[in-house]
Image 1: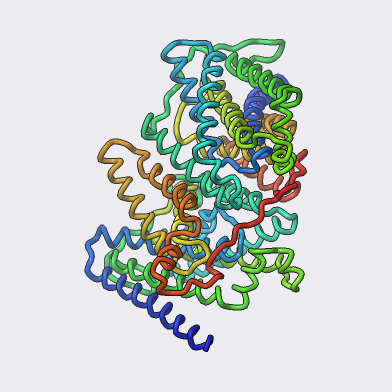
Image 2: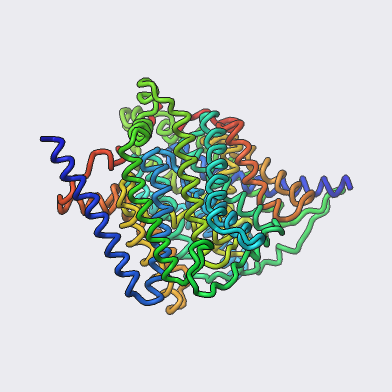
Length: 289
Length: 343
């Protein structure tokens, strides 16, 4: 019994790191640009399809698939910001929200048109390999996904903290006007930020492609999951996204063990409602919107 | 002088409205079954769009989970009617009361704890999705298999709200007319002024002595109750209710697209917007089926939302009004650009 619980919690922690990466993408975009990307789940699903196709066609290791997803999705996010999102950054929040709902419908429609509604079971051998450590038996795919996600989160944190671009990004996040005054190229910072946020979602999608069947309808679930994660940790907070991801991952795993599967799907929403009502700024978020 | 011109413009507004609905009644008398069924949905969504419009366009609170209230209304009518044979009129009333209560509780909890703006919008969708999953797992209401009304005999029975497609068309038309007129009336009432004041500047409204907290709860509650009435009728029209279709994200989008496309905060906007967007959605769905491209209607919806906010942020209706200058659009019809928070 104890080892069952340990296994479940370990599995939750591993997937939680990936959720943390998804949430990080959302929270970086929000923290810097103050826009709420309701099409984030679609980016995850794009990533899942990239993972699915690269593994299927070239049989590459999942880490390489994630790298491909990172590049493709960064470019996609950069272009999306420059061509569309840019025009709405200074609009009221409810207009932005409606635009992102529009983008989300647009992308899920494109996914449906391209790949059809049927789920595609993963092609990777990785899905079936397990590793035993003491009492734990873990999916090899989950371990790789979690390790990559964890490394990426750490690398991104260091990059934002120490690099010149990281400083300008944080400057733009703290004070947009001040950033403009000291000569920051705010449009470029915004475009790169959106690219990084989108790439986070895409990489996370590619990493979990051996675990989830690729399917367009997953997008809404991932969007809401990302929001739940981010709000648990506090919108706009870096560490909060990670903590939120771990919390949701473990809570989901425990709910699946203790209750029916439908409770597992309902749990993130229940958590979101409870947290919004009792701790609306999350654990770390302090910024008001 | 000012007064008489106001009255003249009033007569024009109400007259134009009456003409539009009379024309729609004539259309309902002579159209074929397909047009009737499509327009019924358009008119019901106009009514529900008005309820959403009341909340954001006038009250300033964004909901992206209106499917929750629509679903509550639909289930209230269906459970009472299918399981106990109670007339839908009671179901509509009860559904409105329950949804109004749920809306009030949600609003009370969140505004009490200063959950506003985007956080409130997320709360509405979380509540809607939670309810959808719960109803899907609730055997008493049929779970995911849903509830089915008995096939209508075709005879019109106003007491039980049963009849043929044309009957439901006129029910929907009546609701849409009530929605448009009601929005206009509320908009000029004391509440309308108070709600717009708190939409535009909460602090200033409070400084003037408006108890914005209870007015926010009130506007959400009224919006929820009216959405539930629309949902109850929608369930009857569709003849069956499934949690995924009546409480899903798609319904929330259907409800908000009319007011956004037509013009937020205006009385006619949701009608114009639904008339434009919903048939487009259906046409693209049919085209997509014919071409084997299942996501085409979703792409069309998304593109419409983006393009409207991009190029016509006030919506179609105010642009038409400006173009022809036939009816003076009062300043209250527009949502001003809210200030962006700079810290």
